[in-house]
Length: 339
Image (cartoon, rainbow, N blue to C red; front, side, top):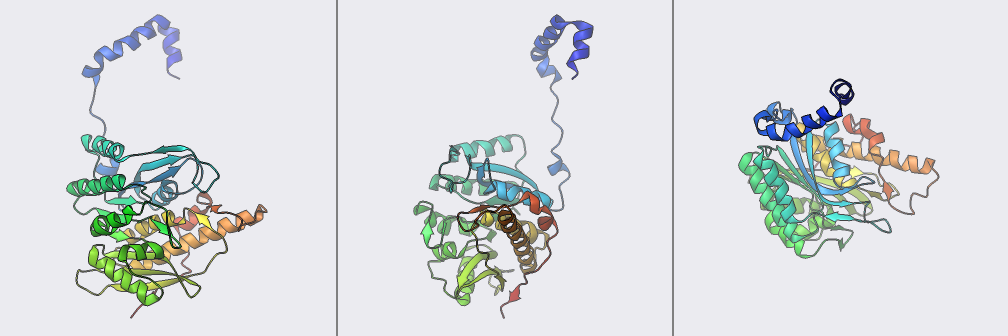
C-alpha cells in the first residue's frame, strides 16, 4: 500500500531504480535481526521443539499437539516429519516424507542463528530407523545447549497387538531412546514392546513402569490399558533414582467410537500440565485426561448432531471447538494412588 504514493510522486522508472539500487547496498544496510522474544523474554512455561507428522486436513501429529500447547502458554516450533494431505486412514493420501538428513539441515539452520535453545523436545510418530537415529542426534545437540532439556517421547509403534512401524524400530526405542527420555507415554502394546513383558493386570502395568524407570525416564504414563473390559491410565513418577516411584491409576470411561490424533493430543497435554506441576504427575494426568475426555464427548455429540454413524469409521477430533476444555479443564477423572 506504500507503493502508490511513491509512483505518484516519482514515477515507475524511479521505482525501478530504487529496486535495482537495493541489492547493491544490501551489505551496507543490513542490520542485526531483533532478538527472538521467546529467548530474550522466556515464558514461565517453556519453548518446545515438536517433531511429529503433519496433515493438511485433520488433527493428528503436530496438528493435534501444537495448538493445545500454545493454548497452555508454550512457544512451540514444529518440525513435520511427514506432510500428508490427510491421515492414512482415508482411502488415499499424498504428500512428502522428511528424511534424517533434511531434519538435521533444519537443526543446523537453527543452530547457525543461535535459535537452538529449547526447554522441551516432543516426539511422536517416526517411520524409519534412520530418522529416529537423527532424532537421537537432535537430543544430544539440544542438551549441549540446554542440559536441563526435558524430552517427552511418545514411542508410537502400534496398538491392539499390531505394529505399524518397521519392527527394527522397537530395538532402537528400547536400547537408545528410552534411556535418554525424561517422560515416556506408551500405550499398553507399546509398553509391552519396550519391556518385553505382557501386561494383563494393574500389577503388570506398575511393573512395566518400574522396568522403564530403570532404563531411563523419571516419568512414565501408560496412557491406555484394557484390563477386564476396563480402560485405565497408569502413571508413575520416580522422583529420585533408586527410590520407589509414586504410582497411580485413573479409570477412564470408554466412549463407543474411534478417534484419530488422541494419543498425540494426550502426550501434548501431559507435557503441558506436568511442566506446570512438576512434582505432581497425578494432578497433571487428571487435567490431561479431563481435557481429552471433554473434547471426545464434544466430538461424539457433534457427529451425532450431524446425523453421522459414529461407529462406521474414525472421527476427526473437534480441537478448535474444545479450546476452553484445554485451557481450563473441569477435573472429573481423579487419580488413585497405589500404596
